[in-house]
Amino acid sequence: MSDAERVAGGSLGIGGRTVVVRNGVELTSFRPASGRDRVAARKELGLVDVPTVVCIGELTPQRGQEDLLSAWPHVIDELPHAQLVLVGDGPERARLSRAARELPGVVMVGERSDVRSWLAAADVVAVPSRWDGMPLVPLEAMASARSVVATSVSGVLESVPADAGAIVPPQDPSEMAAALSLRLQDPSRADDEGWAGRAHVEAHHDVTTSAHELARVYLRLVGEHRGRQG
View 1: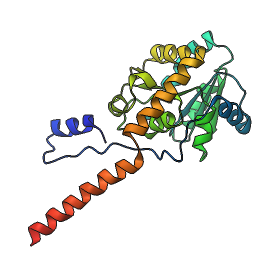
View 2 (view 1 turned 135 degrees about the vertical axis):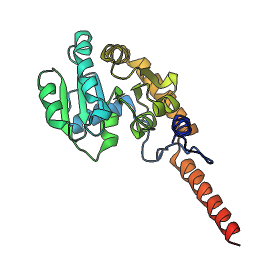
View 3 (view 1 turned 90 degrees about the vertical axis):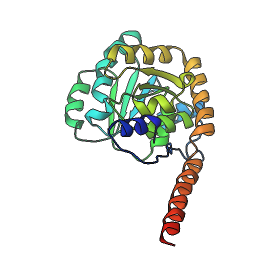
View 4 (view 1 turned 90 degrees about the horizontal axis):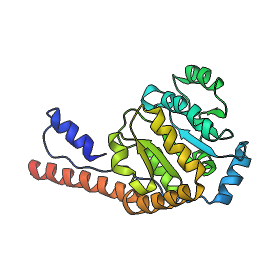
């Protein structure tokens, strides 16, 4: 899914030809959400209409929600009325729930299927992964015209451009907090980053293009196999 994975495979002795087919997002399903959409989504979801960070993903050590909760007190110091919404379930839910109860403005909503509504409700989408391939959430957030604050794991570095948000080191709560606070305090900047992200996914991460690239790889391999058999 990324050049970094190709390089990592080569360093581990995986030889042969490789083709990078990057993840894509369904652009007809994930559409840009306006400020009006944001207010409506918050009302629909039962959220307070205040500066909002949304984090979507399975609750596991890999996804780094623990680091995001560690960053949150620093955000609250700057914006006392901000809220952080964690969408998802997983093995870390009980432990994260205990930590969240000690923090103001944190809402945990469990596993949900209406991802687009939660993205629409966000001012900023946080992706605090400790490691990853090429996660879909940043692509879906950019397709929804939302600013992204993500960690500098391999796939993110290749899919989130500098003008679509911020890339911070993994497991660095202070850097994460600073990037989130900056965007929550400057909604115009966050909106500009969201639209830059939308343009990026339209140009580079359309799922239709990804599917066609993958189909071409399979068809080429099938043709080569038949040629060898003949």
